[in-house]
Image (tube, rainbow, N blue to C red; front, side, top):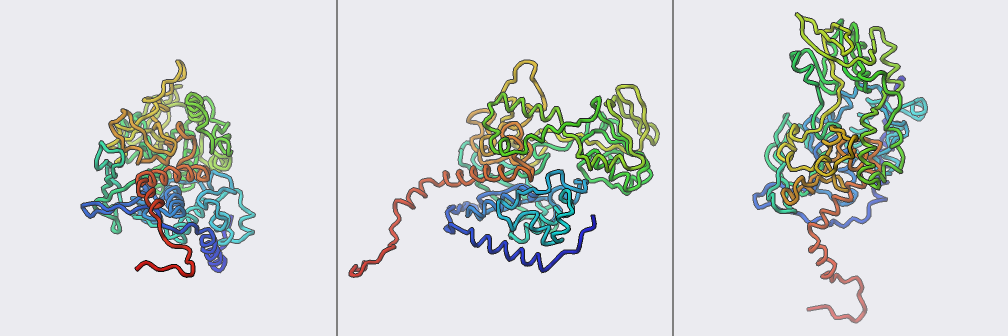
Length: 489
């Protein structure tokens, strides 16, 4: 679809409406979070958010609306490159419904539709089937700008640790390292930390050892990483996996001039039922935690085992291209580099030859693999530490998900060993087993953001509850002046 140029006057009007809406809703105005000072003089922030993608931005805005203003989002990428939208999100359209809401937090003038209509016109909106990915990236950039959300870009978070590991209300030490010219260096302290660090936020994107043991790094890539598709012109590309990203990468490779893109499906046939779809209701997004542990285990395992098919338009985009081939019931048995060619043999005995491999094999959960949680990995409770499934219902990948509290906070593997962990919150796909699909997705923001916001503000209040009690009990400001009253000398 051809997109019309930006309608500057309409966008200006929308931004004025945003300002009016926020002014109309700006109550109460009274600051309430007691500032903290560190003896060293190092900064102390009330909430530090790791990641400035859609979740980090929306949470920053939500906190400000609750008058929590000492908040910083930190992202290792340059400004404008946060999240996947102009990197590995290689689909042309979002996979969610067109009428999606989320970052707006219920304010109509901040909705994606309001921005798109102001930017491209009502007719362009009416012509859409789904929200264009490039426009989603532009919307988030606009959202950050118009709301003046503070972000420290080009800044890497080092290993998180408690200043006083045996104290439940310990501050969290957050080392900072610059990754670019505008990055921050040094040390800050945080009362609360939120890991809004993407789909792979509990570990890393995965490439099977079958590939890494057989090929040099320049001959393969993970589907969610940086790929030089121009270098694949006239090349034969193998894609291992059948998720939506696998089809996106196959199509992108062929559109960049690859000679062939062969996609390999482990299952007997590609998934056709979307196990995630029933979640898109208030019932499950808001009340998933009403299920007991066994029910949550069974639901999450069902979702992971069933998988998601690619959206119809994603599938159609790939299969319409010359050079695309899909092989079902074709798990790989071996990979080898023979001369300058990559040889692949399937379990069924079929043999293929390629020039490059893309692993669309998802992510694995392992907190030791992430810098920010590397020092906490042996202290965070996982589902295997809290829950034993009935015989026959074991599912090792599910056991690696964190066992979270009601407001996304980590819990201790061993009681009393890390009492500060409730100050660190997991707001990524790691929420699946504990809280449902309430982290790292725009579809779930309407319910996930209020839940984590409640936990953050409750903890900030509880940390200074004696101070808040005294504020009420010692309040003596005169509101009423009666004629004849004698002022105090």
